Amino acid sequence: VLSRVSPVAEAETDKAAPSADPRLRFVEMVQQRLNEANRMGEEYTLTLFDLSASNFGSCEPATLQSFFSTVHHTLESCSVRQNSAAPLHDRAFGVVHDNTVTAVSVQAKLADVVKQFGGKVKGANLKMHTASLEMDDKSLSAEDIGKALNFIISGFMRDGSQFAIKSLAEGAKVAVEDTLVRVRNFRKMIKGDRLVFLYQPMVNIHTGGVLAYEAFGRISHDKGYFNPSQIIPFATDVGVIGEFDLIAVQKALATMNAAADISTLASIAVNVSGTSLGNPAFYHALLKILEQNKPMLARLVLEITDAARIYNLDEARRLLARIKRLGVRLSLDDFGSGGAAFDILKILPVDFVKIDSSYIFNAREKRGRSVLRALTGLTHDLGMTSIAECVEDSHMMAILKDVGIDYAQGYFFAPPALDAARRIKYYKEHLKTADQTAAE
Image (cartoon, rainbow, N blue to C red):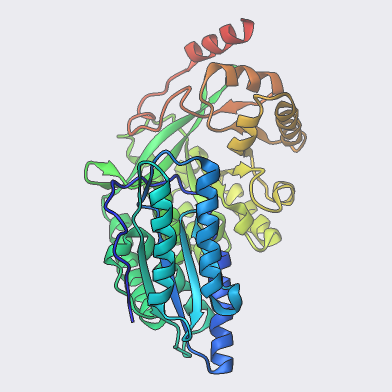
């Protein structure tokens, strides 16, 4: 049965910055306990607690850490084998308990801890939301349980006061229904006129000329755009990232062919996910689109994102080589992030290598600059062109020249914009600024 604890005190919301998400570990723990309950004929309950809408006043970091440690230990003492409680993030927790411990008693113990803390810290005003769910459904697969738990946790963290799911089985059902609705809406958006491109130049750091304009896909919404961090992970998780990538390539080719929004001299770089490239159906559909647009292919760059998701690099090399023979140039995005980065660079037949922004930022320090110089030298030794991303100022440009980077992309030159590729521009003034900074 669903149960909630009323807020301990009314307060203005003071949400903390999110920390690394530990939900995977929590989901694995809950799955283990559910298997155990089914095997032993026990009935377990999952109870979630969220304190992220609290104002912690003038609390010292050490005191706050001690408080959350006490919360965790209190929940552990109520949990199965006293080791079945875990954080969902730094201010929310979940606990699995058996029927000898009621949800109400767990909530009461935690409410006491919260009240004691609230009385000690000046200005503290705490809110606590909680919900309990039955874990008695034996028909769910491990995959269904994982999806249900992730959906349940997301819904609870979004608004614990309105959370109304009562069991894992109900969570799984609602998650499936919600996903289907979101997939339908997603397809409508990308197949309609709501998918637009914002263009950002990749600039030669010696001449100021533009190699290509990266086309950032955005879905228009209420006079703005959906954040890509809200779109791409969802599309990947539910298996429609390939559809998004194909439509993006088609739109880029159509835009180049129409020559209304971009210069006839401009090349366009379009992102294609490594997940998509691992799908034979996607590859064949992509090849068909490219073969129908051969006059435009010399101006097209396919930028491979999430290359670590390509499960068969040798097959990908063969397929990408065929695409290159059509005249398309290839770029590897975020080199250095994810797994098997050097194998990817060694195997895939790319023309350009975009070095991950973490190496660019770290190059402000001596050791980081040495690493960036080594990576740049490696790309050149392999006959590839190096590109630095997220370049923000003239000081960074001076560093890039020092280590031998070929091209740079970032807000130092221009933010992504609808009309950025409409007229070819040389960024010589920006280079002069960078040279002046280097001379100072």
